[in-house]
Length: 117
Length: 109
Image 1 (spheres, rainbow over the protein chains, first blue to last red):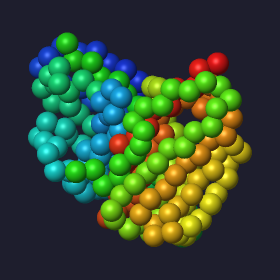
Image 2 (image 1 turned 180 degrees about the vertical axis):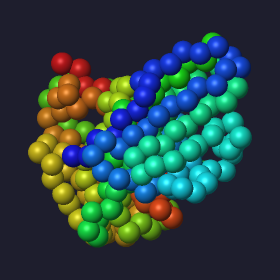
Image 3 (image 1 turned 90 degrees about the horizontal axis):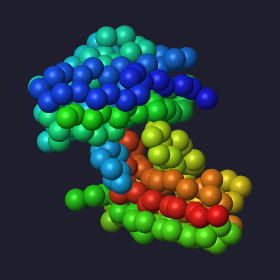
């Protein structure tokens, strides 16, 4: 199946610093990528939808100035958590969608665990 | 409010037992998907159900879509420790995938 990678897999940072997370579709082009956040023992919550070459669409309650999303190519999207605080500590998962024929399939990355001290 | 409510939230059973996980909503969906997520990993698609009343089987897993397409269930027969994980139902709405509240399953040897 299609592969989506994320880097780094985990990161620890000090409060106030910014952290960039990369999401790559390794063997397909993804016109749309999604960023989710998952707190311990909870489900995935969609943060934003990212389309290549255009601005991301953020879900209600997600601060676009704090979570900067860039989708510069069909295989790469980045999420930057700016001025991170301990409450931003979470598991961040990206997903990439591909269309093959009439079927759309969404593949998920392995996630990035962020711990803000 | 969550569009997809899953129950139970957490289930701890012994190897060999059967179990059923439910995904309920007041909305009608054109399709529902089921995912399994293991700790520290992203979710993996198990199945997509499309037709009301549809039943799909994946080895020991049986998925059913309600007749009215508002709910779905996942039944696992003879659970094994490898079935441990977070089970998520999801629907695609307005070009985005929305997940249910999740059921965390722990199967002990």
